[in-house]
Structure formats: C-alpha cells, structure tokens
Image 1 (cartoon, each protein chain N blue to C red):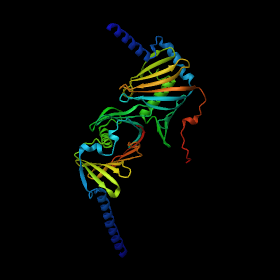
Image 2 (spheres, rainbow over the protein chains, first blue to last red; image 1 turned 120 degrees about the vertical axis):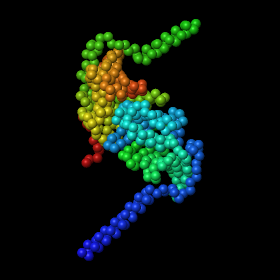
Image 3 (cartoon, rainbow over the protein chains, first blue to last red; image 1 turned 90 degrees about the vertical axis):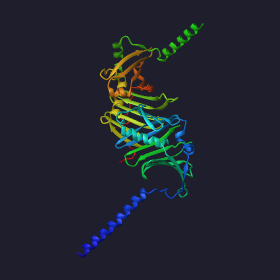
Image 4 (cartoon, chains in turn brown, purple; image 1 turned 45 degrees about the horizontal axis):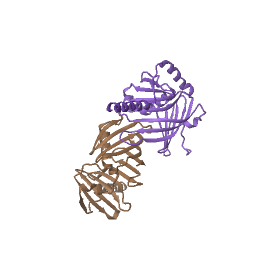
Length: 223
Length: 217
C-alpha cells in the first residue's frame, strides 16, 4: 500500500517535471530568438543592398532538381531566368526534356503556362508560389528590419508581412546568405539552406517545409 | 528596281525555308514506305549509340545540351546513360524502371507511373516502328528526302496531346534505323535527340538493363 502511494507520488512528480520540460520546450521553440537584439528599420528600396544576388542575377540558372512530395519523387532540371525586374520564368523539365511545369512569377504571383495534370492543383501551385517567392525575395513586405546577432556571427534581414516574417540570414564570416526562414507567429514553416556558393550563386539549395512533406534539393549545374 | 529586290528576297526566303526541312516531300506511295519501315523491328534487335539531346526553350538564347550513351535490346529493354550535364542512368526493362542518380538507385513500375509509361512506350515505339502503326493514338504523315524518311506523328489522346503537339521521327534509308527524334510541345518548345555512331544488332549483355548496388546486402 505504502509502496503504491510512493509510486503514484513518484509518477505525479515525474508528470509535473515532464510537463514543465514540455512546456519549456514548446515555449522556447516558439519564442523569438532575435527578440533581445536591437533592430533597425531597413529601407525597402535598399533591398538590392542585401548580400543575396540570386534574385537579381541576369544569368540563366540551371539546377539539377529533386522534389520529394509526400510519396512522390520528381526529378529533372529547374531553369530560372529573370526576364524583367520582378518577373521570372521558372521551368522544370524531366531528364528527357519534357516540361513538368512552366511558370511565370510576376511580382509575386505565379502564373501557370503549363503544368502536368497531376501537379496542377491550386494547393500545390500556391505552395510553389510561396516557395519561389521566398527563394527569389519576391514577397510583399510591409517593412524590413536589420538585426545584428554578433554572438552567432549573423546579419539578419527580417521582412514582415502580417503574421508572417521572412528572415534572410547572412553568415558574417562567409559573407553569404546561408539560411532563409519563413515563420508564422514564430513557428517555422519553411527553411531554405544555401551553401557551396559559386560566384555569388548558391551551388546547393535545400528547401524544406515543416508542416507538409515537401522537400526540394537543387544543385547548380550552369549559370 | 524595288520589285526586283523584293523578288530576290522572297526567293531567298523560300529557299531558306525549303532547305530548313532538308527537301522533305510528302510520300506518294505510303504503303511501300510502310513495308520499308516494317524492317525497323527486324533490323534492330539491338542498338548501341551515342546521343545528343537538345532542349529548346523559347525564352533562352541557347539550347540546353545533354549527352550520353543509349542501349536498346528488343522487344522492350532500354538504357539511357547520361554523362552530361551530370551522370544519370535510367533503364526501362519490361515493366520496371530503374534510376541511378548520385549512387542512389530507385525502382518504379511503369503501370503505376503514367508519365514514365508514356515515355517508355513512345521511345520503344519510335525505335521499333510500331508507334506509327498505332492509328488509334497517332495520326501519321510520311515525308522523305534522298537519305531519310520523316514521320510526323500527331497524338490523338488528350493526355498525350497535353504533353506533345508532334513527334518527328527521322529514319535513315541506308539501314532503316532511327537517326533522330524531335518532340514538339504545344508551346513550340522542343526536345531533339540525335543518335550518332549507331551500332546495330551487336550483342549487348543483359546486365546493361539492370542496375545493381555495388554494396552487397
């Protein structure tokens, strides 16, 4: 009997500890890591000063691409070409050259020129629009803030848009934008890692969604 | 004088457009050509060749070029071994598709993947010649010049039409084998595949149509 009480006491103690731990984990995961750092407002017209040249490159960028979307693997060549300021042609072809999709991203709006039936669904097109807007810095923004995180060797440009914030994070040692993150109420929705830079264009890009099973793996083969 | 210049210019334009299609004229005796093309499958129990693939996209000034080696063994085994712009192997073996990409091997079956199955049917059908006898799926036009037959296939089925407007197959008359395939999309963008250094009916090991992991499990 005594043992039973002890056991239940132990259990409840364990539960409390466990709950605290979970609570801490949740709150720390959701808290804003940049909250205590000073931020200064950054002029939207200075967007080209951000050390991220991918959206402004005049070259044709060709990436070997794998897209994992739930249980589907799609692979081929992704071609990105800036045709005018804020207008991009984005085409994915198979190895054999057949087009999987052919989009125009025009001031943040993704127009479909062609898309295979299986992917041509509103929810998928909207997701791809979000992804390419984040990668090509085309999101509508209310304000940009500059944050210096000296401890982590980071310069951060925070784009705010309602409840959603987009972070472009530069590693001050390499001087390159090495991570892009999209957060809604401080919970990360999309993360993009960029590395192996070749002449200011990332050689590898890994884009991953946190709440849906979608991952894009891009490898630069021509610029 | 003006009229003369206009005349000369228009003659040049006419010659240029004519030359572009390499003097291809519509075939008059289609039945005879069909008999000739029937030799495609007889002549080619195996093919080993190099290939150059060009992707034309209207918004790009230069075509995207891929290169590699191609193997075919009748009735239904294909191996595309890309070496440029990166290494990639895709094997069609009966109903199976094997892909080797950066040491990762994936398998699919054509029945579960409609797009792969269409590509597979199209490639094998072009090489073996049964694509242009498939009147349910394609409307075919026959052209010829001194050295080649040109077959223009227009897909009839909606799902195929959605992907391609026309498939052009160029067949060498000298040995009745496929020299080039052009896949034209509805946007007029195209992919052309040129088969060079073709070796016909030489022994190809069945191992070529299988991809095995180097690591023994």
